[in-house]
Length: 262
Image (tube, rainbow, N blue to C red; front, side, top):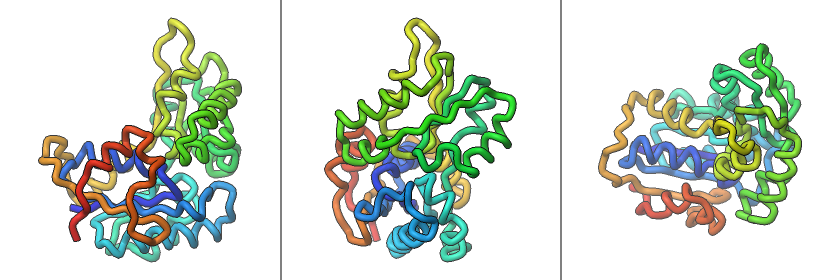
C-alpha cells in the first residue's frame, strides 16, 4: 500500500504521521512546493497550477490514494485535481474540522490564515455546521510561514498575537491550516485558562488519514510491522525531508523510515 500526500510545505507532516500511525506498513510519498509557497495569498489559478504540479509528481510514484493535506489547495484546486487524476487515483481533500468542533458545543475559535479567515468558504462552513454555536474567526498572520521555517521566535510571536484575539471563554479551537497542527500543543497552552478544563483542539490530520484508507478499501492496522518507506519530493525533485521538518515530532517519526519501494 502506498499513500501520497501533497501540500505547499511541511504542513503535510501531521497527516502523514496520522497515516503512519494507522498503517505503519504503508509507503508514503510526500510532495510539496517550498519554492512556490505560501499558497494562501496567491490567486486561485496560481494555487491550482502549483497543486497540479505537486499532485502529478506524487502520482508518478503510483500511489493508491492522494491526500491534499492543505486547506488552501482543497478550496481552490480540488476539482482540477480530481478531474486530472480520478477515478484512477482517489483524491482526498482537507476540510477544517468545524463540524465536529461545533458538535461539542462552544464557544469555538477558528485559527486560520488571514486569507481564509472571513472567506466565503469558511463562512459557509460556519453557517452549515456551527450556526447555533458562538464562533470567533481568528487570523494568524505569519504563523504558517514561521512553522514552515521552524522559527521558534516567530512561532511564539504569531501564536501570542492570535491568542490575544481569542476570547477567554473559548473551549474549542479549530486548526484551520495544516501547518498549525504541528504546534497544536503550543496553541492550546496559549489559550488555556488557569485551572480550567483543557481546551479541545480539532485538526484534520486523523480524519483525512482515515478517509484515505476508506477510499481504497483498507482497514487500520496500527499493530502492523513498521515496514513502510518514505519518498520526499520537493518542487518535483527527489530530496530528503527538509531540515525544518526535523524540528517537529511528526517529521522525526517519518525521517526514521527507509526509502519507499517502487
